[in-house]
Image (cartoon, rainbow, N blue to C red):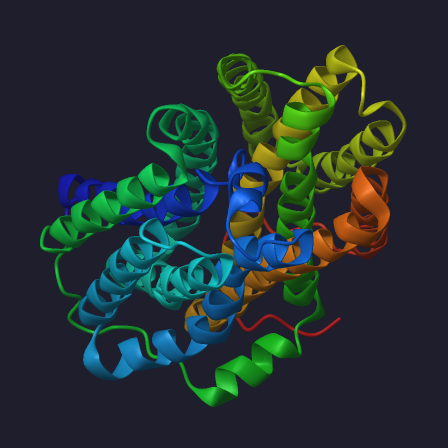
Length: 394
C-alpha cells in the first residue's frame, strides 16, 4: 500500500476507534451524578450502568473478531457501529436506571475494537505496524482528553441524554468513514490455536492485566469523583468544565515527551513502572485529601498524565511483543481485558461507594494499583523492533 493511502487508512481507523472511545469517555465526568436522579437508581445500579458497556464489550470482542475472519472486517465494523447507534438511542430515551443499563449494554455490544486493530494489521506492513499502533494509542489518548472536556459541556446544555445523542451522531460519522477504507486482499486470520499460544505468553498476559487494572481504576475513580466535586466540594458545572480543560490539556502535553523518550531512549519499562507507581500515589493522596479542592486538582492532573502515558504505551507494547501471526488474537484478548476492567471498576466501585463511601473507592483503587505494580515489576524489557518469530514463554 502506498504511503499516502496508508496514512488515510490509519487516520480513518484511528477516527473510528476514537469515536467509540469518545462515546465511552464523555459520560465519565457526569454519569454518577446525573444517573443518580433516575427512578430506581442506587449507587450500585449506577455503577453497574456505567460498567455495563464494558461487560458486553469484553464478552463480544473475540467473537466479533472471529466473525470478521469469516465475513470480513468491514461488515463487522459496520454492525458494531450500528449497535452503538441503537444503544445510544435507547440510553437517550431511558426513563429509569434499568432501561439505561439496557442501553449501555447495547452500546457495548458493538465490540469492534479488536476487529479495527486486526484491519489495521491487515493493511499495514510489519515494519510500520508498531508505529501505527502507537499512533492509534495516541489518538485514543487524545479522544479521552477531548471527551472529558466535551462531556461536561454537553451535559451542561443538553443533560445526559444529549451525550447519548452525540454518541449516536458519532456512530453515524464512523459508519460513513468505513467506506473510505480499502478491503484487505488477504486478511490475517485468527485460529483457536493462536488464542492458546497468546494465553500461554506471560509477557502478554502482564499487559492484558495492565489494561484491565488501568480501566478498572479509571471507572471506579469516576464513580466517586463527579459526586465528590458536585456534592462535597460543591463545584459548579462551569467550574468543573474549566478544571477538566486545564488539567487534561496540560497533562496530555506532559505525558507526550515521556512517551517519545521511552521509545527513543529505550526506557519504556522504567517509565511504564513509574507511571503505575504514580497512579498508586494519587489514589493514596485522594484517600487522605479528597475534600481539599487544590489537592484534588493537583492529584487529578498527575493521574491523567500517568493515565495518558499508560493508555498510549500499552497497545504499542502488545504490538511489539506479539508475533505477526498472532497479533489479531493478542489484540482481541487485550481489548476484552480492557473492557472487562471497565465493567469491574464500575460495578464494584458503585457497590463499594454505596457501602464505604468515597474513601472506600479510593482505597479500592489504591489496592488495584498496588497489585498492578507488583505484576509489572516482573515484566521483561520489551523489544524495540517487532519480531516475526514466535514469542516464547517465560
